[in-house]
Image (cartoon, rainbow, N blue to C red):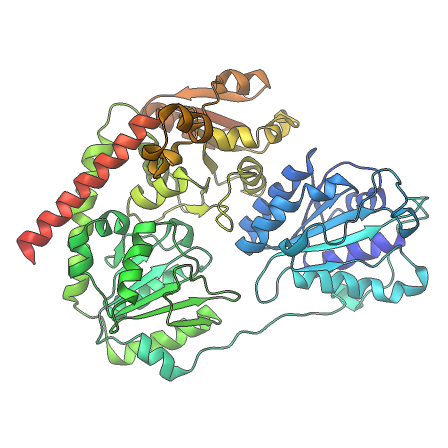
Amino acid sequence: MSFCASLVDEWIRCGLKQVVISPGSRSTPMAISMIARAELEVHLRLDERSSGFYALGIARSTGIPVAVLVTSGTAVAELLPAASEALYGKVPLLLLTADRPPRLQGIGAPQTMAQVGILGTSVKEVYDPGVPDLGKSGHWRSLACHAYSSTLQLSPGPVQVNLAFDEPLIDGPAVPTVGRPAGMPWSTRGVTLGVPDGRVLDSIFDPKRNGVIILGGGSDIGGSATRLAELLGWPLLADPLSGGISEHPNCIRYFDSILRSERASGVLLPERVVRFGDVPSSKVLGSFLSKCANDPTVVVAGFNQGGVIADPDRIVEVGLSCDLELMLDQVLERVGRLSNGRNSGYLDRWLALDEAVATKIEVNVDSADSLTEVGVARMLASSLGPSDCIVVSSSMPVRDLEWYAGKRSGFPRVISNRGLNGIDGVVSTFLGVAAVGGPQSLVVGLLGDLALLHDFGSLTWRPAELPKGLLLVNDNDGGSIFSFLAQKEQVGHTEFERVFGTPHGSNLLDILIGVGLSARRVSNSCELMTLIDDAREGSSLKIGVVQSDRQSNLELHKMLSSTCVQAVDSLIESEW
């Protein structure tokens, strides 16, 4: 017990605040040590897979490592999906896996398996200290510090600490060893990022060149990037996950719709492309950037806070990991000496096209009598405030938000599991974010019916104790994103529906109400606004089901794309 008490005390000194526990026997010493500390907020989740994503939601929202405690055996394997998302999504998790002692390994003892290596390449580090040995107690706090700091450092991610416990599991009082004075951690470890050479920066951020700034998720530099775009006279293409959407004149909101026009690529070819953070989900933008990279006069540069520079299309000419805030401070100073705000005709073209597309989307979506999936995304983006948060599922919901959410100041925060873009664990991630959302904010989850069913069990565990929030489900009876892919036309209807469309045929509203959840049907914008208000004023979880149709949704997207392209082409033909 002293071993666990020492680790927990040290993790608290390092900054640990949140713990997610799934019940089990072998993890007893650590569980008792955790619940004994008032400094920790302890969350209980029945399913280890849900625990992993619940913790991921908390860590993604706060940026602070979250500990997940599970028992031995298959419970450990259940952490793999969340660990994988955390690794590629750069989310700090401390995965504490209880284990049987070495004497029980390899002899067929129940609930015993090889747990070191089970998470494979989906964790940054694995610590396996063995059964606690009082003779090595001087190393315990150092172990805790190393594991905690490993979840952060250059690129945050998950770390596994495999904890072998022998009988008796409770072997004495939970008294920690002596730590550093004044509650300080045993050691402080980290990586200090530098700033690129000034000559490199000058060649990229050249006010005499026409350029584009792309702000992806994980950058967290919205204000500085906007100021830079203003000084350079460059358009800013901000992904909703970046936190950089605003009403600033340089912010281009509908870049995906604009770039669907072949003519637009011709008149908007930049000389510099600078991307901060992750790659936005827009394939149209990716295709445009590939065209830019094929032009020898265009420099494509990628910057991030640390780790791998995302470059799936292999177009980045200059890719640098650095301290983004320090680098931008330096760039802003350099550019500021050369330009006090450039009157760019290139930027004016982007702005004119953005306004033309905005008008078409407003006319064709906002005035509709019934609520569409696109309309839900737009309403959330326009009605929620900067202290609110949208947890959006991968596949169509995140794309609807990226493609069609309007331009405004006070845009809500957006969180999504875009490390691996899966729909598993979305409900649990939402619940984790909602658990730390705060009384003055509203956390809204936006997902499809298959994502709900994939993680439905997370809603059935103590439904009366679920955190305050609003969960919106677009129910189109299947996987709508497949309707946008080539197999829709290449596979027969029956085969397509069976393998890709996958209709579930369930009455989601009845199922949700049947397990004791507060759920209602949402049919129009007034009902949605009423539900948002109810969720904000209430203290429990509210759920809204928006009935949709996959074919109608496909036709709406095609119509919007066609209408916007026509508006872009018409403006280009008449003006340029």
